[in-house]
Image 1 (tube, one colour):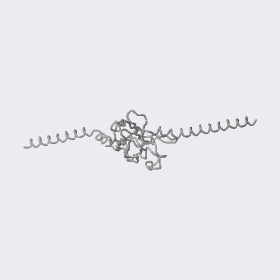
Image 2 (cartoon, helix red, strand yellow):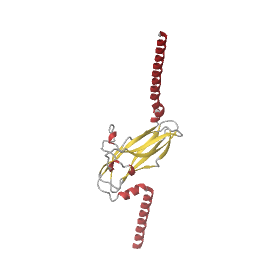
Image 3 (cartoon, helix red, strand yellow):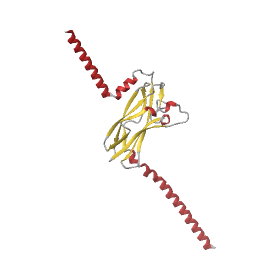
Image 4 (cartoon, helix red, strand yellow):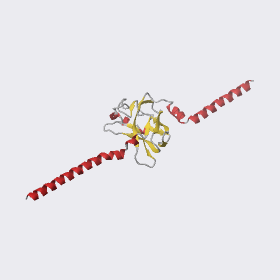
Length: 222
């Protein structure tokens, strides 16, 4: 009986030790997963010069642009793209989602190498019928640290080493203050901004025609 009891106790102790060892291995294994998936060094691969694009003033029908610069700090080449995101929360009204107002210049896709900096323009176009008020966020403090709960509309950049699958990036909150009534010149101003070269050529033609007309009048007078 004594030998049997000792054997049973030995088996019980081995089982307990094995269970505890398995638990320790499982916990250690789980703790290592984020290290391999997130790769902290990749989080600093691309730096950005703006952490928020908030409280920009815009008139209905107007287009405004904000420059955002990206710089690759890691060795090698990185490929990425820009996109928009709306964080939908129950109870939000239509003013919270302005992703359809946003576009990017140059194209949203990009390739950068170590030490290279590229400037993008985040363009926001307010519809002609946009009502005055804050759009894209719950409050004017949405761009400040500690106010992430008040953010709704974002632009996002994310990239990865060429051929890689581990992406890093950042969500940048966006909000605008629609002010006043629709500017009757807004459409023309937006067109001129988007077609600078064509606008300069048109202006040059107008000046040339004015000069020729003046010369013609002077010649007729003499």
